[in-house]
Amino acid sequence: MNKSKRMDQRLYPIATLLLAIVLWQMVVTLGGIPLYILPSPLDTVNALISDFGTIAGHVGMTLYESIIGFTLSILLAFVLGVMMDSFPIVKKSLYPILIVSQTIPTIALTPLFIVWFDFGLLPKVLIIIMVCFFPICISLVDGFEKVDKDYLNLFRTYKASKLQTFIHLKLPYALVNFFSGLKIAATYMIMAAIIGEWQGGTKGIGVYMVRAKNAYALDKVFGAILVIVIISVAFIYVINMIAKKTTHWK
Image 1: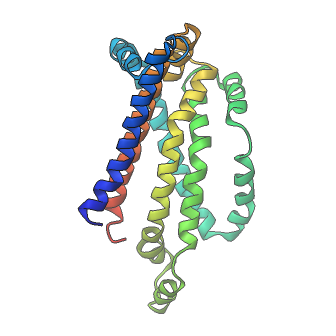
Image 2: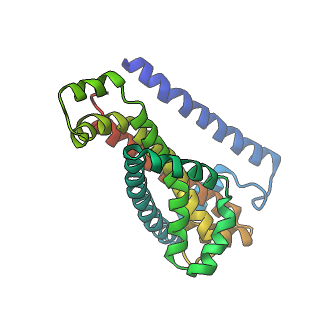
């Protein structure tokens, strides 16, 4: 991809976003919309700057919950994905259950986790695992299935063991799908933590948003949303960078 095409890919979304922000500011300013109904972009930035210290403390807790849950999701998805690929009976037994599990509303499970495990860290981590585990695991399993049959036959011809085939063929081949699943999960990670904090907690960006909403400080709510977007984009960017380094051969 040449430089002009890369610039176009970045320029158009940035220009569209800037245009939307300008229109948003004009609608609020010219329409005289009060702050408690719809804050302007300037109101949002001012609230973020003035309340930055408080928001930073809450964000730290949300990040702590998210990183723990995300890490455990990756480990669990990898182990189960390998088992499902290695043992067909495991896949036949668990795959339908995994699909059905995603039809359960997350917000309905959060109060149950709080009743069972109190208001601490564990309920939030469990919610994050439930949300993030599925796309990672399914993407990894699909990656294992998409390995070119000719490559598999070539490894059999050279009498490679199952472990050698997995390490040198299946795993590298599935990494592309694996990182796609990671990016999907990363977009849900912060959201899942916030849902857990909405239902019950003493600290976190979700708790901050609930308090700001109850005080009709919508500028602070929008400021928190802006922080969430920035964090999520940063996680996806980091995953993209790791993916490029890891799958450079692709």
